[in-house]
Image 1 (spheres, protein in one colour):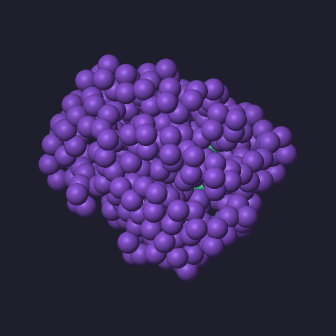
Image 2: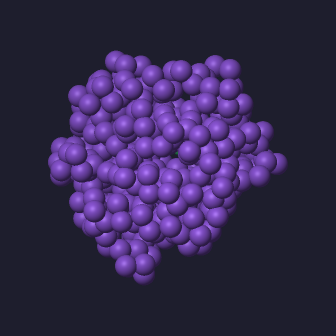
Image 3: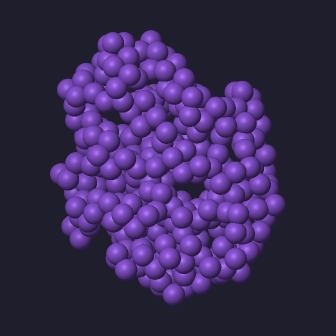
Length: 347
Ligand code: SAH
């Protein structure tokens, strides 16, 4: 099996059967071997730098009803909120002072935030902080909308594909959401000129090893700039409340494979990873990740952006999260840098 990791390291690709064999046959020894290689590739491309992104969760209203998500439309126990433009700019102000040079605006699919409102917001952030990148993570929109937001100054867009397998996608989403549209949005975003992030949950209900292989092959095809991978974690007010969550071990293994397959990719060590294990984010970095996304949302709304149960850091101020992250990264020999942290093909 080590020969397959060597092959992936050398050629950045494997046959589907080979990926399957690796994932199915993984052991802790094999994982250690994979992580040695994935760290080596990470050092060659990004040294020991860790890029930080300030996450601003600006609305938890959502018209969608994804079966796994705590802010799904039919969760009537969710306490809904929207941040005002002033509140969002205040998050950016404190974030900039803390050394953030990327702001990630994430939210549910909230029709209150029209193109006009978002364009104004993006322009306002860009005129105050021209040295910063803006990442949007607000779901599926029309081509015209994506183009307008890009023209207004948005740099990047995160839209996890969730699962590359169409049948599996339908088991995680209601009928009105289609895997074809989600994927088409990703290709469209890339064509418009965004730095694009896709991604998937590990251990989502009904996921098979074949599905994970399809996720890898989809990533190879899309060639995204970023890939967000985190474990599925059940939320008590969703149809998947009683399902089992994804494991740290498999999530780390997938991070390692993605680093070898797309060496320059921006790979976050996610909050969900930190939620299932107190050292999860550190371990993600040691498996090849190079990005962390501390929370900049006001503490008053943190508890309300509950995608899954037991989400960490809901009581901490932005500054606490920022310095906690720095200490954690230094603790494993890495360095948080003040930088936009663009993909290396763009630096
Ligand atoms: N509305 C945006 C943002 C969604 S939230 C969009 O559609 O892209 C960001 C990500 O959180 C989702 O893409 C999903 O992969 C993840 N997520 C949602 N619920 C989750 C859960 N229960 N466990 C783990 N991750 C979850």
